[in-house]
Length: 201
Image 1: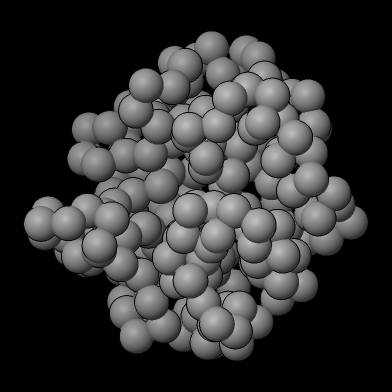
Image 2 (image 1 turned 30 degrees about the horizontal axis):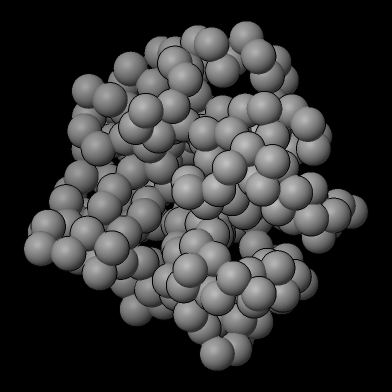
């Protein structure tokens, strides 16, 4: 079964609503949460990561911290996600042996390089047009097909993913999808996750 990754954005969910949103998403059985709150100070990120770790504990949901290796190590997260400006992949691998190391990629070359460096999964996009990339056209299904033909590590598609188009990226070879606003802004999180899950099967 393809994976569903949730990427957090407390500004979309509402600062006081993020943890309840994540609780519902975990109850709905999402496969991973990428805690991505770039503007938080280290201490604030640690506190949020610790609370999120409690929510994920004892469930199928893996906790991955975006860029925050210190916070990931401190709370015992399942892994870390590296994007633009993060520490180099080889450094992250040495600091977090045996943990999940994900990498954002936007080109075939980046994908091949990340796999060679030991990435555990690739977050590839953006596939479809999305409000978070206003004015930038999506890279399309062909982008996912190309990446999946070049690498063997899981490719997780991101960018404008919804229940109407998610099946297309899975058919193109993706191992799963990652969504942000679809869940952060959802009125009924369980129903939304359920629809997304059904669209992947």
